[in-house]
Every structure is written in C-alpha cells, then in structure tokens.
Length: 95
Image (tube, rainbow, N blue to C red; front, side):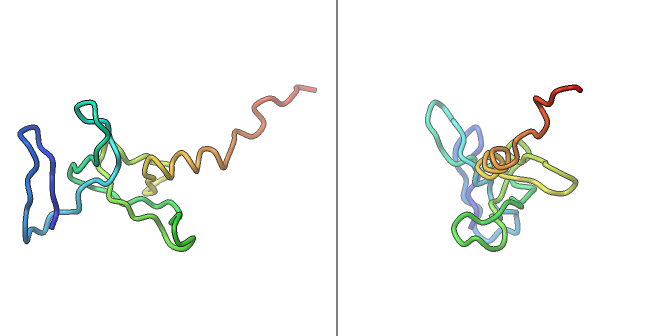
C-alpha cells in the first residue's frame, strides 16, 4: 500500500497498481524524511545487509544516480561505489 507525498500532504493509495514510493532520505522542510515521490528505478547496488543480490530500493528520477546504461544506484550505494573505486592515475607523472 504505497504512500506518496505531495505539496498538499501525504496520500495513501490503497489497492493501487502504482510503483513503490522513493525510499531515499531527503531534507524536506528542514527535516530529514523519506522522499516518497513516484519511483521509476530500483537500486542496482549490492545489498549491504545480506551481501547477496541487489539493494532494490525504489528511487525517483531525482535520487537515482545512473552509473552505466540501465544501472542506477541509491545515494547510499552511490557513496559506497564512489569510495570503493578511487580515480586511478589521477596523479601519474609524465615521463
């Protein structure tokens, strides 16, 4: 049963066939809350809890980070991905 946040408030759409709401944390009206916008993507990052499969967090257009064709990461997995693969050869010397 998805909940969605609109400018006028939160709406519960019982029995709908709509996608799950975005599960990313966002700063809304000065407080950190779950985004709850309509999702169009699922996170393809590794599952941090079970170390198998993918994270599968529902993501809206604003929070999905595209890292390759048809591969999106949530903000948490994107930070882990970015820290795990530093830029190689950034300070190589020219000989």
